[in-house]
Length: 178
Image (cartoon, rainbow, N blue to C red; front, side, top):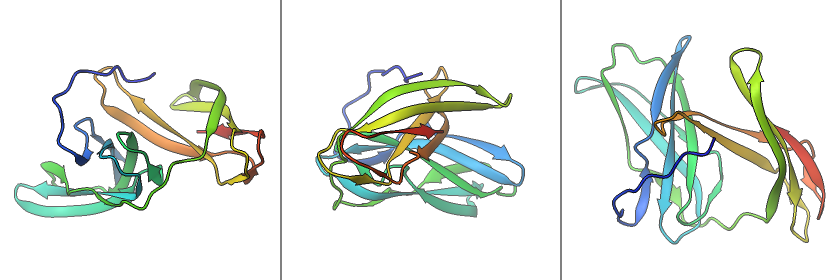
């Protein structure tokens, strides 16, 4: 389901980690999931999010990840998923300022023609669908990105899946699985 927008105060221009991040353990790892907001007029490329875990004032673990979209449009939000070694005895975590390049570009004109989601294997949620290339040129390495929220709007999961074809010709349709 799409997150229900809630009124927020006007933000100053910039690129921010939104306040809907979550963290969860998995075996010997920890996941940090969230979204960034590109509150600028620029197309961003290679948006990098770094998280720091603390035990009181002591840094005990740090890692980073890139958002699941290489090019982020102006005023767009996109998810990230950081997977790191489970920090010992941590009490809090915070994000460093987001790093990015302003050399991004608009993404090609693609359309999701079908999509559906359902429980898969008892503990996973699976989204399948198809994407059509509406550009007059060949497009390569097309992927779909999905973000799952809880009822409070917190990010529970963020993932992506490439379409079946390496390259999509104009008008061609290919399926994805997330």
